[in-house]
Length: 265
Ligand code: NAD
Image 1 (cartoon, rainbow, N blue to C red):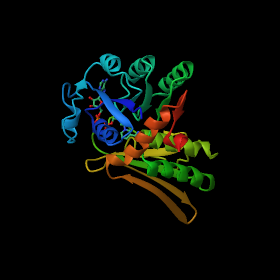
Image 2: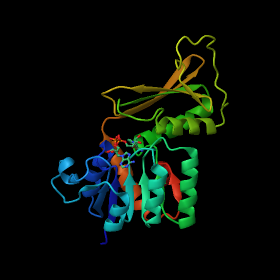
Image 3: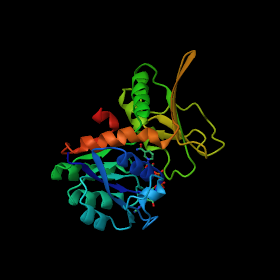
């Protein structure tokens, strides 16, 4: 059996390390390279506690792509400079699976066009945890019957973007469920900026950043005499790995960009 050759981009980061462990554990996948601007030269097996594997973190994406000839690059980095990196990955002939959040609509559009033009598989998902995907789907369904809702997302204190990609994707789905995209706002006086959260297509979104959390989200619906809360908690980053591994296998057959883990299920 020919294994799928995988490079991890952002390999020194929290998600990247988890991906290194997950790829190594699968018989049909092979870790062939690691890219990150931090931890350069580190053995990815040593830093992830699975034992030295000879795959060292390289600071040059181009040299990793050239030397290891991956079938797929799994990327968990930042939105900063993402477009350039994604473009280089596609130009090399590799497919891309990314969970990086905070990407602009313009970047997503360019990516989609490039993937379509090159007929290259790209998977982009704001959340690779199946429970979070279901939480979004249940919220979308609830919004058809209970149009008034707000989102509270809670993440670890090292998260760089706010609100989370999952919160925005949820709000997008809720807005598409046919409710009004004008926020109902009874508040006449705001004594503290941001107290009512951000307004995304009529949905108030509140971001909490505290040590102790990995990623959680609660969607609260309110109607006469009742409330409904739909909540998902990510207890460890392992929760994302079955989704990432599934995406690596599925992207091999794609000829365009698909968005959301739900598109692959
Ligand atoms: P992290 O800061 O721990 O890791 C990011 C890594 O990327 C770091 O090692 C950093 O050095 C590297 N990096 C950043 N910019 C780079 C660049 N220009 N060149 C080379 N390397 C670069 O962050 P994390 O917690 O691992 O999260 C990474 C991304 O994944 C974030 O956007 C986060 O929101 C997202 N995320 C997505 C999901 C999902 O399911 N889709 C889940 C968790 C996190």
